[in-house]
Length: 135
Image (tube, rainbow, N blue to C red):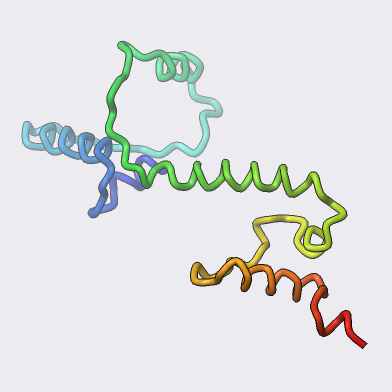
């Protein structure tokens, strides 16, 4: 369904979607009607296995397809988040870990924060500050 949604957006920057839209326009200009159907499930469809097999078998090697960098942002963010979480899980006795066991729940810090300001904020979060250790 996401492919159909991408094709329906008027302001797309994806070269692949733009190529598809150009081909569809060409078909339309040659009096071909094209209808797309989104089928939520393959259950009960005769030949589903054959179609899936053919869809996974390229006719020729695909090379040099321009993909916008923005298409990778979600994947890169996810990989970084998973690696960070794996390292974070190695230190369950860390005081900040006890407050935020899931790194995705850590509040984002402003990009303008210096290292000292970040450290001060984290110490306040875990209760490790001059105010809590005096007196």
